[in-house]
Image 1 (tube, rainbow, N blue to C red):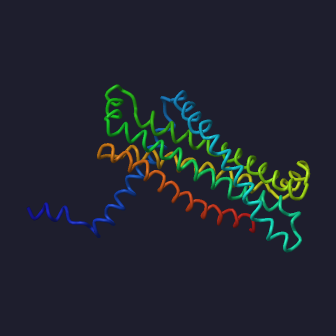
Image 2: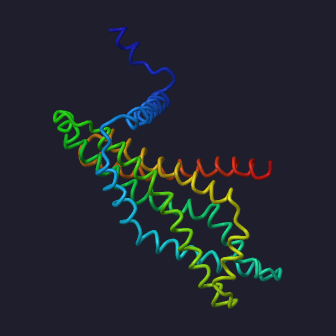
Image 3: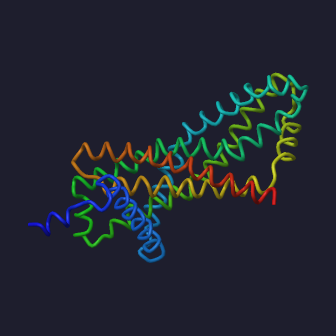
Length: 265
C-alpha cells in the first residue's frame, strides 16, 4: 500500500509533472514523424488530396485577407510618411513589411485557425470513434496515413500560400497607392523589388516551411491524442489552434533574431 502511494506521489507537483510528461509525448510524436516519413509506403494520393484541401480550399479566405491587409497597411502608413514628405517611399515600406513579416505571419495564423482546427477535429473524431484502431487491424499504418501525409501537405502548401498572399497584398497596396499618388504598376513594382533582398525572400520561405510543419504536427498531435468522446474532439480542435498560434509567434520571434543577426553581421 505504501509502495503504491509512493509511486503515485508527484515528483514536483501534478501540474508540472503533467507538463513535462506532455512535453515528452510531443517530442516522441515529432521523433516518430521523422522516423516514418523516410520509409514506404508513401501515400502520394493522400498527400495530394491534403494539398488540395489545405491549399486550394483556403484560397478564397487567404485572398480576401491578403488584399485587405495590403490596403489597410498602406492606408495606415501613408499619414506617417506624409508628415516627413516621404510618401514616395510607401511601396518600399509596404514590400518590406509584407514580405519580411506580415505575409508569412498572417497566412500562418489564418491557416492555424482554418487548417489546424480541421486536422485536429478530423483526426480526433477518428480517434474517439475507434477508426484509427480499425486501420491498425486492417494492416494500415494510421500514423503514416493520417499524420505524415497531413504534416507534409501543410509544410509544402503554407510557403506557396505565403507567396500568393504576398502578391495579393502588394496588389491591394498598389491599388491604394495608384488611387492616391497616381503611381503606375511598373514604377510601383520597381520600387518594391529594389527594397527587397534575397535574404528577405529566402527567410520568408524558410519561416513558412517551419510554420507549415508546426500547424500540421500540432493539429495531428492534438487529434491523435484526443479522448472523452465528442467533447475531446472539440478540445482537440481548439487546442490545435491555440498551440499552433502560440508556437508561430515564438518561431517568428526567434526567426527575427536569427535573420537580423545574419543581415547585420
